[in-house]
Image 1 (tube, rainbow, N blue to C red):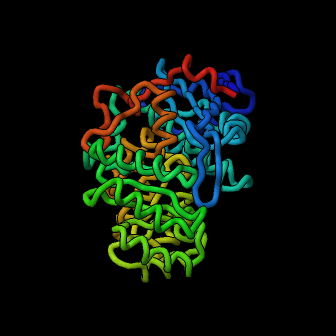
Image 2 (cartoon, rainbow, N blue to C red):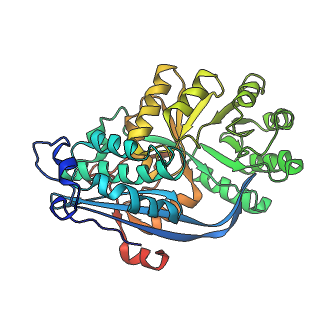
Image 3 (cartoon, helix red, strand yellow):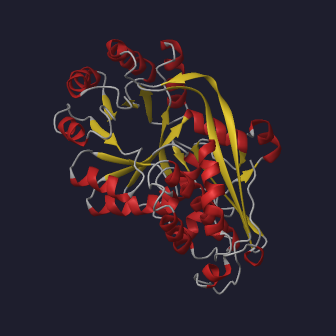
Length: 387
C-alpha cells in the first residue's frame, strides 16, 4: 500500500492550518508522506505464554522535505498503515520538519476521538520515527548526536526462546547468544506451566553460570502460580521475571514485586501507549524495571518522555524489541539499562534495512558515519513482502 499527499498548495483545506504552524529558519516543508506495509513470515512457528504467530508486519513511513527522505516504522498490522493514510497524512504534510514537537502535538490532537492507545499510538510512532530521521538527515547528523548522548554503546539481551521451541532448539539459541558475548538472555514461559521450571533448568545448563537468565510469561500466570514458579526459577539463577501476570493487573505486579525471591526483578510496561499508563505503574511501585517500546508509545518522542518519568523516580528503563529503532534514543536516555535484541525483529531489520546493527561485546553502537537512524530501506529485497 502506498499513500502520498501533494504539497500544501495542492491539498484543499490545509493552507490555513499550515501557515499557522511553527516555521524554522530552514524554510523547508514536509512535501510527501508514503506508507507501506510488509508481512514477513517467521523462520519457524512461534509462541509465548498467551499468543501464537507465524508472521510479523512492519509498517514503513517515508517523509520527504528539502531534498532528503526520512524513514520510520513500527511493528503492527495493515490497519495501522491504513490509519496513517486516512488520518495522519494531512496532519503532517506541509509542516516544518525541524519542529517535531509541533508535528507530534498536532497528531495527538487529531486522534482525540479515535482512541489514544493501540493502533493510533503505533501509527504516531511510525511517523514520529520518520520525523526524527528526517530532521537528523537534513542536519547531516547521526540521530544520537542530535538527541545528545549520555553513552555511545547500549547493553542488549538476546530474546527469543519461544515456548514452541524444543528444548534442544531453546538451548541452541540461548547458548549461541552467550557465545557471541551477550551477557544476558531471555526465554518465554507460560504456555505449559508444569514444564516451565524444567525448561528454565535446561536453559541454565546451556548458558552456564556467567550469563544472566531472564524469563517472560507474557501475562500467562495468575498471582499464586507466578509466586510458586518464581521460587523454582530462582533455583536456576533467574534474575528477571517479565509480566508474570497481565500488565493490566497492577496490584498483582506489585504483590509479586514485593514477594518474589531476590535477586529476581519484576518488569512490565511493553504494552504502554501513553504517559498515564507508565506513571501508574511507577506510582503504584508495581515494577522493579519499567519497559517501554518506542514503536508503541508514540515514537521516540514518547519514549524519551517515559525515560524522564523513570529518571524522576528513579527506576531503570528497558527498551522493548525493535533494536534498530531504539539504539539512538537509548543512548540519550539516562535511566536506560538495556535493549531487547529480539529474534524476530533482528531478523526482519537485517532483511529490510542496510545499516541494521550487529552486537559488539554485548552492546549495540550507533554508526556515527551515517545520518539519522543510519538505516537505508532495501526496497528491492522488501518488495516480495509488500501487502
